[in-house]
Image 1 (spheres, rainbow, N blue to C red):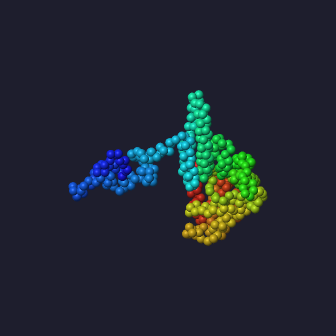
Image 2 (spheres, rainbow, N blue to C red; image 1 turned 135 degrees about the vertical axis):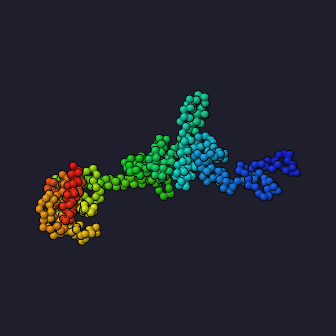
Image 3 (cartoon, helix red, strand yellow; image 1 turned 60 degrees about the horizontal axis):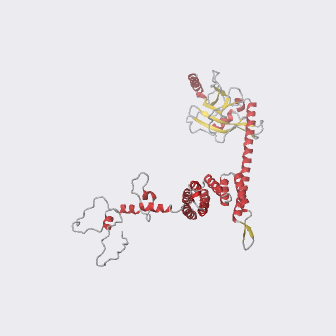
Length: 461
């Protein structure tokens, strides 16, 4: 890389300067490739030789470590854990940031942050404002040092110190309130509140801090606090008037806070309405549940709830047509199980006045089921069939029988003409987790299934 050299006073053009030995890149330590004509080819100047000693990729990487061509800070300084030579040029530029007084350093960071805000680069702007705040972080330590040395300075020095401290305070205030804007745009609302709190400690009359704090509180749905902060800001701006060619008008800060106050009141009203609706719905559900529990108890139906009820989606025990009247009909979710084939059907709501035949007819009355290859699951002719505990055999085995599990763990057969209410209120059956479970078995296979159930119960006991 060429450079400008200063000529000495006794320079003689007939005696040229010695060639420069400076190179744009360090010489590579790798062995050079040998060319056929290397013996007769003159050696290159050091600058060209340093370029030729590297590959194109190596040159690109070295150029990326210079500030002019830098594209990635990790490549310029070396990522964590990499052994990379110190980047002197970059460190020199970094050092320039911290030349001058605390106020000058912080002001430089603040102005860079303002540039980033103008480009809406909120994350970068936040970093610059943070650096400005950190540059002033030792201001209070410095104040303590100065108070210990007050006797060493004259009156003029004290006045200069006070001016410098006031300047630092204004810059710190600006950095905090501007960083609050960045956090607000980044939706870091709690960080926004922290920065505006610092701003108001430095300057309680800062209207920007009131405005941005109010916006953050509104975003967090803290409407009462937002309204209080906004009101304080309005109190600070209300006396201020600006003159225009048309008429006297409130200041822009006051108008902005007034608009924001209207937004807060609208949001608070909407939130209160939603909360009122929610409380009314909760109260209605509570009353419905009380009436439902009373209705079930009055009917003599036993219900037991486990710690892990099944997911029934929107199906539940309820009263119709009036959920607040105990005389309304109770509707139950019904799970129809076919234990011999491992299949099931689910009915979301069956009224207590429905008969067992109605329930079975709902699931079996639409024709042959896809998994019923033998055609066993049909309604049949309504014959008496077979009872579980050795009762006499009926006239026919065509169709299906329906069973419900008892509280003792056994099975009881229910007649097809019985209402669901009569089945559940008999005293032997309990409803678990609000779901009525019916077992449907082909009448021709009832005996074998009952024997199997007895064996399982015996093993279980």
